[in-house]
Length: 224
Image 1 (cartoon, helix red, strand yellow):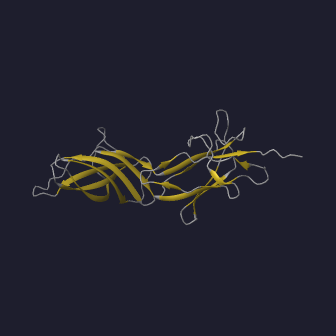
Image 2 (cartoon, helix red, strand yellow):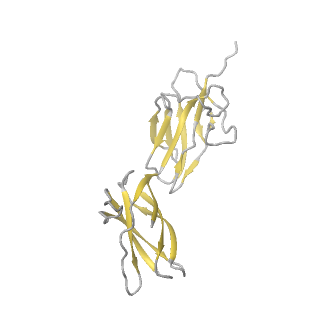
């Protein structure tokens, strides 16, 4: 049974289980499909790769694997077969398809009306902010210009460490909200360097969807 398939860069993370003959090694073959049949199964159209797993004494194994696979996108389907490495060497039916997810980073740039570093109800997104996604070498690997929603999505990412860099529109006078306020990382601002507009480094795991890296902006009070 396949439980999850997450694509990014040239790799595919696959999570699933197999129940079969105890203490037996199986070769799993993974395939891409564009359309499933009415049952949700169907033969594999393009082979993606293989991996080996071994069942325990009860005939069960849970696996989390990463294989090399390029050209996958959201909405593609992945299925698999298992072939026993015993004298019988039988091959299973195709597993039920799972839909490919994309390894991603998503967040919001918002106007922090009370400058408290927390995204409150009623506070809206900020348009015109350039968001750069930098990898562990400092290179920019993705760029997004926000619209009125303030949202920025980055998909099909490699596993690894990243930093987000936020560049507000020049001449508007925005300042970055204080970071890591309130104890809820899902609604706080994460820009730790207000000069560069960058966050701390964060990790995108093989099955990763990072969805809580936000940036708050406000207009500082200028005393006469």
